[in-house]
Image (cartoon, rainbow, N blue to C red; front, top):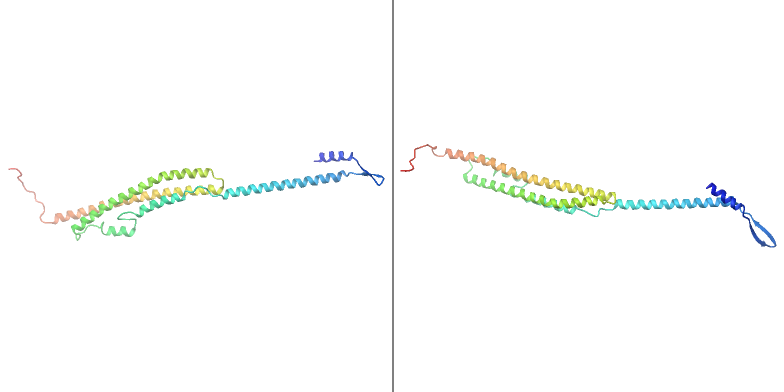
Length: 244
């Protein structure tokens, strides 16, 4: 800048401009190099300020564009599909046959159908209870298999949703899209855990009903044996001739 200033001043000092004669006299216009240099410097500083303002406006515009990207929502959503999968599993659990997932209903069953056999209980009641227990076991196994079939059917849907969410997460243009993709992946994991919990609960229910059936059958068998042995005379061995 200093070199340019001195070169400009030196070149302008050697130039003299003569004004045309006016009123019969010749006049000289004297050029002030210092004033000219100051004007050039002032214009340069103003131009630099304008450039700085333009750069600042460009930065602000880019910042607004980045903010818009960060606030943009993820164009893909798997929440509805996940909700439908959870609803199907919940519906199957709510359709549990005979002994459902209800504490009061379980207590009533174990006070009647699965109650210990007593001497006051008639043979007809014990037979009816045994048949009811067998039907409960069959229903529990059927419910467990239905839940398991539904969970297996959800695996293909979960695979598709996982692939789509991972692709959307990798192509996210902003923080909001990345966060939404991560949240949906967490929701997918929660749905898978819910399916696993439902399958374990259904299988455990079926196993518990079977265990209760066996325990009650053993108790009823002892009572029936006692009644058989207490009726009439006990068995006496004797000689029997079968063929003449």
